[in-house]
Image (cartoon, rainbow, N blue to C red):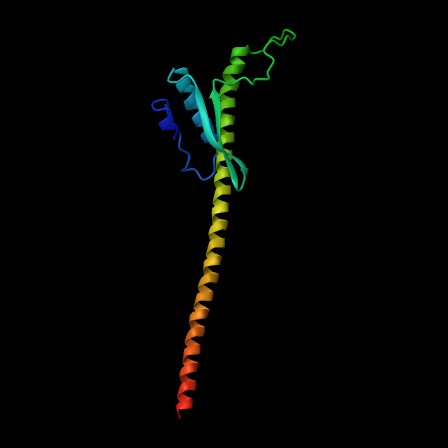
Length: 165
């Protein structure tokens, strides 16, 4: 659906369906590829789409902008504070922290997506078990009625034969 709404806007997608348990290594690999593509100028904004786990019955489709880092609306941009000297420089700190931030957000999304999938599977299996039980009960009743009809017919034939004598 996203591809239909934004044709040509999707530069890359990452499929993690082959992994049974998402790991930080996967998130780190995706984050490294994303930052490389961003630095090469292949895109100017990256959004992450995943299912956020609410409960076993409810998963919330979620969209999150991860590149560039979105500043919260309630952040005070004009905060005046004490002069701080950073060691190493601010750029060196950001060069290290921003890729880690992206990897952590991706890892969180992978875990949320996995939890959502597990909840949906659990719900589907519960429904399948309940439906199978209902079907077994209906078939048992149908079988018992057929067997009772056959017994009743046989008894009627025996009684009719005995009366004929």
